[in-house]
Each structure stands twice: as structure tokens, then as C-alpha cells.
Image (cartoon, rainbow, N blue to C red; front, side):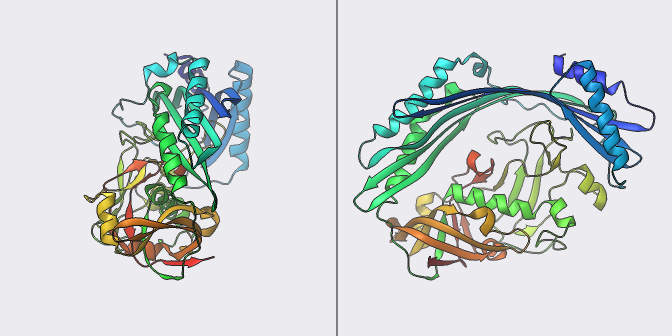
Length: 448
């Protein structure tokens, strides 16, 4: 038993008759190293350690949290959660899930992550930044070169019988390369994710950033018109983040989704299947249980292009008389869980990126989108975002494009998916969503 689970168990013993308790704890250390000009620009280390208590009494939830695990602080936090429950409105959908077995999930913790010292982390960040500078012209330098990692444990215990603990580690390398020519300057990201700093491919991240920035040099505004669009895997992942926001049962129930009442309708071609898999072996958000202790699994949202359902936690599921999909997410111990995606992605097709470019004919390869959170609305379905990339001609990437705008709707995007690439990768900078090359008709490209 860890110290954290012992703390949770002690809080549970204080439950009053007729009262349900959920106690969630986290103990996590994070390190971030930023390199610039061959030196360390900043190094930060932090530890997040605390407990959040959710009380369910007379049909109402109350929540409070503390970073002090002493007995007095825990008692005061429990008392605060009770006061918050007494002041909240009751709701028949307010429930804590019952206990259910969850199969263990291997690979969440890399034992080498705990062995990595500060010097080794610094060396990786310096190597990342140096790899961009060593690439030579047109690479000019970096806007950011960051190596970060986290390791720790999360635990949950409830009066309904849930009791679980998981250890996990993550590491990432992120670099934004600057390229420069007479035509101007460009920048682009390279990212890698793994479970330990020792397995980070910093050279791969640097090479990716330089390649993506260099090929945008000399970009011009495009002509306007309807055009086939080839989405870069990172862009696909970012757009899926917006789409899953509209497939969130809580958003549907609050009238904030264009998909309300449309289960069973065809939204995309038969070769399109969208899933959220909380146990995917490569998914950054994989875990045996979700944020309220429900076992995670594979949830099909679009099956063969038909809307199959929504993402649920226990409360949204109770409102509809269905079961949670294991999609209660937390952002630490400071707040209660809410509905959200884990590892969302489109089932990969069989075509390579090169094959999709060949199929596209004359098209626009969208490498970056800007203003996505303000320009893509999951409630109305409208999309209007800034974009940069390259034209596609004769099956190959051609002249670069900048200051473009892609416009359409989420239904247009879904209905227009011509082909799904096989190059699935999960993208940490896109909320951990998965993306691959996507061939889409029905969107409009214009110079801004």
C-alpha cells in the first residue's frame, strides 16, 4: 500500500450514514528544461501532491481539495465538501459508479524514467536545440526547444467499492524550428512522445521541425475556390479534438452540440470509423480506469460513417439511462471529473501518405491551422480557420501557401472524407488525439 492510498482509505472511514464519498489523490513530479542558443534558458521542477474529495448527500454533489495531506487539513477539506454539497442543487443523475473489475494495463510506467537525473535531462534539451542549428541553411535557430517529463501515481477510492492505484510516466520533446530565406521566415513544430526521457527521439523531433518549416518558405496566398484538401496528421488530430467536443454527451444534453438527436444517422462514408480508446497501447491518455474509477475501453462514436453514440461519464449516462463509456477525465486533484475524450482517432485505412497525394490530383496540403478554438464551433458546426501548407500537383507537394483560410462545416468535413491514411500517430500538442493523413472534398480554400 502506498502512502497515497492509505490517505484515501482513512478519509473513506469518515463517511456518514447516507453519504457517499469519492476520494481522488495524485502525487506527481514534473521537470521541464528549455534550451536556447546552446545553453539552458530555464529549468523547472514541480511536484503536484494532493487529494480531492467529492461528497454525495441528498442527491447533491460537493467538492473540495487540498495539497496538505495532514489529518487536520483532510478533515477540513471533507467538511468543506459537505458544506458545498449542502449548498448545491440535488439532481437524480448525481451518482457515484459501482465497483467493476478493470484489467491491468501494461506499459504506463517506464522504470527508467525514475533513474533520469537533471544532467541527463539538460543534455537532451541541449541536443534537441543543437540538432536544429546543425541542420544548416535554411534552418536559422529555434523559437523553443523543450524536453519535459512527469512521473507519479494516481489513486481513487469510493464508498461504492472502487479502490485503485496506477503509476505512470511520460516524456516529450518539442521544438519549434525557424527557417529563413530571402522570401521571409517560417517556423514549424516537431514533437515526440514516449514514457521515459531515455527513449525520446530528439533527433527525429528536430528533423521533423526543420523539414516542416523549410518547405513553407516562400509561401504565397492561394486563389479562392473549392478544392480537395489533404490534411496533415497533426491537423487531423486537432480537428478531431473539435469533433469529439461535439460528441460529448454533456455538451449534447446542454444543447451545445450539432449532433443532438442524430444517433443512427449517416454522417460520413462507410470507410470512416471514429473511436475513443482509453486503453490504446500508444495513447498518451491510456489508463485502466477513468477519472471516477470506471474501467476504460474502446468506444465507437462513428461506425461505418453512422453516428453510434456519445462519450459519457456516470452522470451524463444516468441522465439517459445508459452506461458510462469510461470517459470521466480529470486535470489533477483540484476539480471534479467531467466528460472528455481519452485517445480519440479514426481507424486507419490502408493508403500511404504518398498514395493519398497521388489520388488527390490538384489539392491543398494543409500542414498547419491557426485559430482553431475560435474558428471551429462544435455547437454550430461552422469552421473557418487560418491555414498554411503546400499545393499538391501531379501527386507531389509543390509551391508553399500561406495566409489561407479553410472554410466549411463539420458535416461537410465528415461527409467529404474521401480516404483515411494508414499513418496514425498520437499528437500530444493536439490534446493527445490521434491523427493521420486525410483526403477531404467539400471544403473551401481562400486567400485571406
